[in-house]
Amino acid sequence: MKILHTSDLHLGKNLSEESFYEDQKYILDEILNIVKERAIKVVMIPGDIYDKSIPSSEASMMFDKFLTNLSKMNVTILITSGNHDSNERLSFGSKIFHELNIHIVTSYEGQMEKISMDDVNFYLLPFLKPFHLKHLMEEKEYEKIKNSNDMMKWILNREKIDKSKKNILLAHQFVMWNGKLPEQCDSESISINNVGTLDAIDVNLLDDFDYVALGHIHRPQKIKRETVRYSGTPLRYSFSEVNDKKSVVILDTDDIKNIELLELKPLRNMQVLRGTFEEIMNQKPSDDIIKVELEDENTILSPMEEIKQRFKNAISLVFVNKYDSNGAFQSKERKEDASPYELFHSFFAEQNGRDMTQEEDEYIKSVMESLKEDE
Image (cartoon, rainbow, N blue to C red; front, side, top):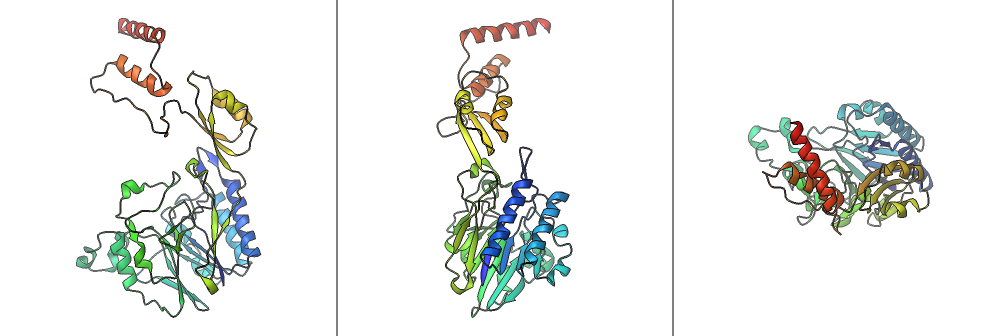
């Protein structure tokens, strides 16, 4: 039985007001083509179907069409909710869908929903945090649940996993190995540095599962073993992902350890173009989604207007002469009692990557003197 794992569709997402609507329609069609060509029998999507808890009508209609087309292929569809999804909205009609082999799980009431097919058991776990369990246990028991790892131990202890069969888990969670958290990128709305390990689950807890289909992290990666895997997003949703290869995971229950990552080709690529304004404008026009990093030291008036004439999907522009060779921001420490003149000097240096010339300095002094006279 061939299975496809994807996640974090984030339908309805925009980047700097640039809509991904056409890109998402295109990539969902690509996934449908893969399902057909590879004779896929099960499609797993562990969370973040939508980018917002209240999705746009366009995003809802797009997902509706995707599900409809999948169901026509006689495919079993397994979906769990993610932290971006509204459980109520995503679960609408789920009882009817169940009869069509579309299983959408958005809540946990003490047992994981299990779907059995042939010799495979699929366990569906929606996005959870410890407080979601509070209504299921006594107060003293709940006090022992200090973090998500404790939460997962409690959940798994309630399951009787039949090891004579193949067992697959769908989960939308942070999973770590040996204290190392998964790699993130800028398109995730949360920071692991802020979360720490409170939301992280030790991968060793999942050893009873032959395959773990993870959602939540946007960069494709395995955790400890090939069969515990984040599929990542099907599209690049930030410029930190320009070098990431987006893919879907294909597995076959006949040899579940033989994982295939099938690369997805997007409608539009993402690029970061770096150089002087003249160098950028001499490059070939492109329809890609583009971020421009200008290295010019001199001020350029309205560069984005000209850049967009050549690169219509340029959506970001930064001047990088105020960054060091590693891209780190060089910011001079400002004294709390700094004068307006000193503050402007500091601001100018940060924006332009150099100190003011003597002529510029004298001009600023004259402006500030005139302001004082006006007061």
